[in-house]
Amino acid sequence: MNGPIGLVRSDRISGYNNLGPIHEWSEGRAYLTIDRITFDGTDGALLCYNNPPVHQVGNPGLDAYLEGLDKLSGLRDDLNFLILYGANDPVHAGGDLKESLANLDRTNEIKTEKEAAGAPPEEVDRLYDWADKRLEKGFALYRSIRGLAGDIRVVALCGGGTRFGGSAEIPLMADILVGDSRSGMCFSEAMIGLVPGWAGVGRTLTKAGPENAAYMALTSREVKAPQLGEIGIYNDVVEVPFPFPRRPRTDNPQADRDAYADLLDAHNRDTGLLLLPRGLQAATCPPGEIPDLSPGSRRVLSTKEEIAREVERRKTPGNYAQILGRPLREVKDELAELGRPLAPQSVEAIQDLLSIYDPAAFDEAAFVRAETEADKRVYRDPGLRAGLIATLEQRVADFRG
Image (cartoon, rainbow, N blue to C red; front, side, top):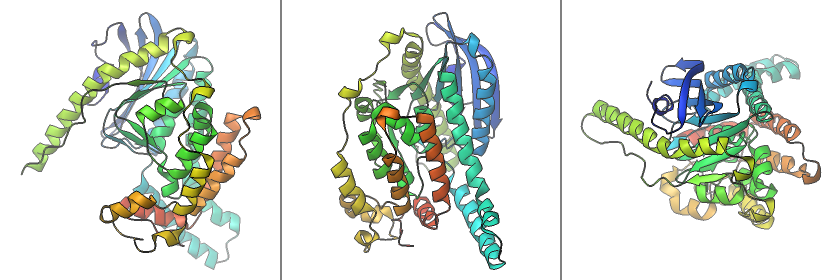
């Protein structure tokens, strides 16, 4: 298998020993492995997920995560840590939006037929089971990782570039995040019509506080590695001193693809040689040596008032009247000033979630359950289709309804 597994199953890191697989899954070019490892004599496990080219987490990948973590749970008494690792590529997407759009269109077609035939509301609502089941798997993944974290140290390595949606939320489920200096996180859901429903808001509240959680979830703006360290999302930022590979452009497309795959493999190895040792150190060091910020020293990315003004501007379709439906590349200047439009249903759902946050009585798991239920509701909102199409076609979304 190509990708990050090459380094994971090598002997190139001092003090590291791979003892072989606990769990393996593959489908096409995608794979998930969990290997038993040791570092400086301390026993642990390493989960490696790879799904090129953009590493989105589809339903088969979610099932593989859950099955593998279930196996790992039975070994927790013999382990001290778990590392979550993957490719160090330029982009890490969330869910498969094409699949979601196809499911939504099929649902809307059947829904119209059933409503015309007088079907009861509960029967119509069951048409969205495809969305509910996926969100329940995301919640189960959160419970599984946080359950392990009660007994062993869980460390996520965020190598590569920007992580969108689920590819940001899964590492956030860990105790400790070690980030690539070139990386970033973006809860893009509010620009699509969704909610960061895989514990994104709940875990950000825990690690970065309510102001930063509101900024990330409501504005859908990307936050880069230095800022992620300053707000408490990243515990450690590793300086990676080289750029991402560039795809060759010749008159032989197949040769270009093959050459780029080789470049990405070499880049995965070289980046992993910087990230994995730091992650292993964070997984095995004494508790007092884990890099962390006290809540009082966190940077606040934006004030409540600034966030409210920006969100009000961006959720108002009339402010985009002249550019609705236009390709993003054609209206870069306008969007640089306005920001991309936000889905009103997402804004309302996220604001409702944040309104129930009480720092004195915060139950993260209960909050994440509420987050999951909120995401289920916006899947049923008619505005979601507009957001999915605009994102897939890279156009300015029209949320006028």
